Image (cartoon, rainbow, N blue to C red):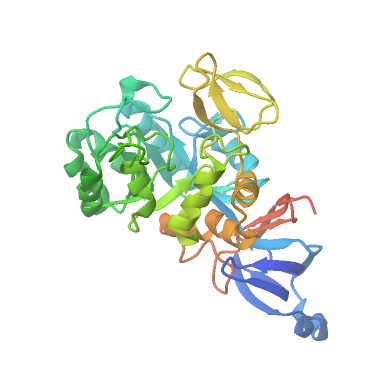
Length: 401
């Protein structure tokens, strides 16, 4: 771990913007932030034992955390090798991520959990794995671009093995409350400190609030994958249903896929989500698939489906049906897209990509914020959100200054 001084930058904590400040990183932690005038006056004393980096008037922010990524750089989150994912993600300012399983069989999930836990014990180059996200297998098979045979009924002998294989590192699991055995499943997940998300479901509003009382606290990519229909209360009135209720439910934090052209969530809906949920309850994700990082073309996904990357787009669609099947988007893209679609500040967008996900997976005591004592995980980028420098645990992992 190197000792680094970052100067000549605009710091986004991300709760406030700090001008004319100098950031000190020491032994893998943020040591302190001081005034530029003080630094210049005592520069010879302050710089002993430190490497100085001029960030050239770029933004200095907490590194991004991607809690929902199915793969990248031709690597599946369920298979690895995770070094390649880590190398790809760090170039886009992502300091930590959760490999996210696409709906797959139990034995495959267990094998993947063991692989990831083994990898997490290493000191790897690039972005770090902070835990595991399992999107399924306890979901409604009627919804989403997935292999329906793997959507199964939860049984203790299965999900207890998933928890055992994850060795305490399962951070998120998406479930559908209508599946048989949901009550016992969610109780077990909560007892084991797993955040429970809702999606791939057609439950009613009443069932939604019952599920919240049972322990659901999180929405897996809002407005994508939900199957419940809205119903008009009268002629010419706007229909209402569970998805509308998600907007106004203060108990739930939500993921958002903010792709380039608003294909997953229309820009108007993104604005409404911001107004209803508030900056503090929104998490930007990539929902990237293993083909992220590839040029336009047709590719075979890990589940056997053919998928198309179209020139100029950051979404993936299934060949033939045209159904959305995730993204090739990166976290810096997500920030840029969210700002452009909604008009929120760069400060707020960075919070959605750093502190908010850190809080959701219970690591905000050490990640997601620039202040003394926090992990030295930093992303430096320009006004167009082009990443110039990524520092993890005080080490420079990517440098394009």
